[in-house]
Image (cartoon, rainbow, N blue to C red; front, side, top):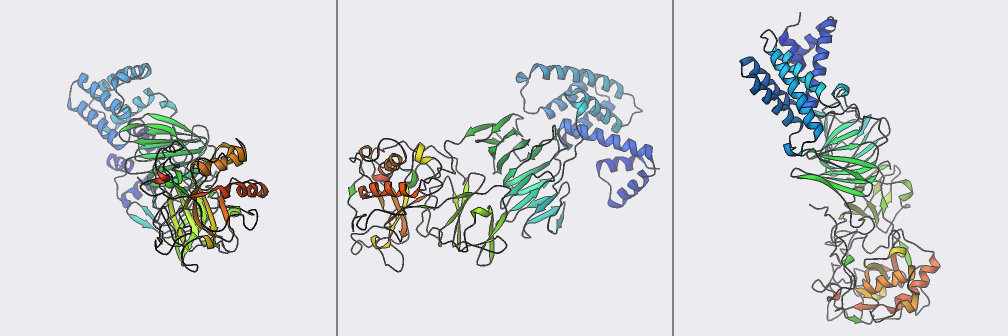
Length: 610
């Protein structure tokens, strides 16, 4: 026959492996005891769900022990109420309680009084007293009678590179294809890789490099029965199928709990905050510290931190379509102090009108359900991207490939891209670009050999209709650029790498040269006062065009998704390009030439490099 000590140890999981095996064997033969144990486990789960886990159980246990020691009923009644109210409503001020909360507390007072009187019967065991209090409180709290059992749905498969780390308690687990975790398992994704978590209903979670997750039900969770895990560090993106009624996906972080019914979003854990970006649907983000919550809808973001209630906001501009910080050279308008000089060399239209004068460099936005493709550099695995088949280049791609990340924080810029037979990518170089950064960096490798991001200056989205609010990017024929024809052209700020020799490099353009239509040119008389031609001319006059490289054509403007038919594009540029001049005093000290800017600064973006 099992002893009370064995049953208590079994329920509280304090037995050794051998002792636990003995109890399990005995329970299979004793139906009455087995039912008693199951009921106790349910009560314990209810206590943890209502009061907040192990710490709460200990506080209530101490109150029960105090009853048996003979402390006054009035004191103990207040202590139990303080314990339960503090644990389940720890950060709510008394003056902010709603009427329903006050009614709940009054009912709890009655319940606690009656139970405390009953507990004074010395024959009752401490464990039974604790269970009765838990059950009474469970019934008293709103929704208690219908509280679901705390059983989380586990993923159907997790795919992670071998360089990642699986652990189960103190044991490190071997990674196998389609690994299925158990409750409590942890995964730390390798710093240069990513992982995919799949559930049976088609929900997909993509874990970014260095993300750390723990699977299973979290302590103190009141609602469960659905999918649930914790993001302890790093970033994830998810495409969540519609969840069953009453069984949302719960994602815990150190600062918040995200409740998801079915949506697409990104979640990031930093040192002192959790950030949420919702692309589709709605996500509820509740603060772990204050119990306050906010609903975040498509196009919005939210932040939760230990010291403040969660708040939602919208990006002042979409960093996918309008990247880089407000004072980036790409977003700096020309100023009243700009000095314009003629462009040296042959006239642009010496050989006739421009042809094929706009070329695409479309960035791709990977979807969480797109195939995961490894990125290899010189035979070493460096990262993973979500990329659909129609975004893949041909056999080899000399132009950079830019892949935006779902978190709206970064982009991966890849150069020298070729596709393997298995769909992975071989690349010569890779750069991770902060969408809220400057768009300018030290030139490293082939991907940004002049230090200028390949996202800079692209005409994106509906900018031909709603307006272009940034500088443009263009290439010119190699003969117009200073520098050795067979090595690298010279560069001026904001480009970097090969500054010109003032004594030799005269009468040429440089990579980084800023060209613009002078302010005294009446662009409306040329292209009208609306439409794509006007918006393009206005951008050339207010922001200018940076030379970012060389081409086999006299002049090539770079665009993203925004395209017109080729004849219209060529006609517009053949009319506008001859009007361009050099902004001779575009420097770090006088960006855009200095003086009063022609446009308002770009709205600020939250930095991704905190």
